Amino acid sequence: MQFFTLITAALTLVAGAAAEITCENRKTLSSSQIGQDKNVQLQHVHCSNAIKPTGEDIQLRDVEFLGKRQTNVCGATCNTNCFTPSGNGPNPYDCQVIQDALLYDSQNVGPLFTMDPAANTSLIVMQYASCETFIVNQTNRTLEYCRSDWASLTEYIAFNCQSTQNAHGGNCVASDQQWFVQYVFSSLLRT
Ligand SMILES: *[C@@H]1O[C@H](CO)[C@@H](O)[C@H](O)[C@H]1NC(C)=O
Ligand SMILES: *[C@@H]1O[C@H](CO)[C@@H](O)[C@H](O)[C@H]1NC(C)=O
Ligand SMILES: CC(=O)N[C@H]1CO[C@H](CO)[C@@H](O)[C@@H]1O
Image (cartoon, rainbow, N blue to C red; front, side, top):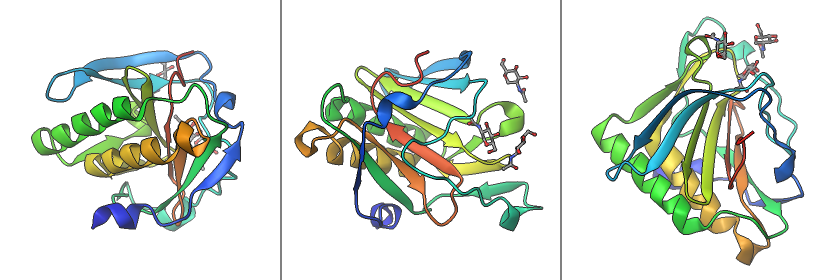
């Protein structure tokens, strides 16, 4: 089952990491509503700074992929970090609405989406009520990822990094090939 290939590493607790992410000079490049009920907001966002995961030292590994214009990263493993302590985290059931919208789009729009630096789609943000999740391409290449994988991660992080675990969201940082990053918590990247 693909879900288990996605989440291999044990959960790690990262203290006080969440608040540190900022998007400088935030520009919303596109905005739409997705899912069966069109209730999840999807935005392509541009920040003047590079968005990096907190609590992680990312080693970019572009070298191996030189020459490939597009890389499909569906099924890539990632390491989950939960942000401690609890408080101001997303309601996991709001995150579940995002998961449902991603699965709906996977069936009805297509299984893959693209993060293309040249098209300014390297940062994709989804939001519903208290839950926000975003994905970042940390390479200068075009990456393709599966909507169903993003859906699984959203669900997994939401329910495993919530207040009952003394957490308020978390991320998943690609492990073998550290190209993308994923976070779930509320109100990130608003400014
Ligand atoms: C991406 O968007 C920003 C903000 O609008 C713009 O300054 C930049 O030139 C764009 N980059 C590309 C590759 O289109
Ligand atoms: C990506 O491109 C930017 C701008 O051209 C450059 O500054 C940066 O070093 C590149 N990063 C990698 C990992 O190749
Ligand atoms: C949105 C974002 O953080 N994009 C990054 C994609 O990866 C390249 C290379 O590391 C960065 O320069 C971009 O800032």
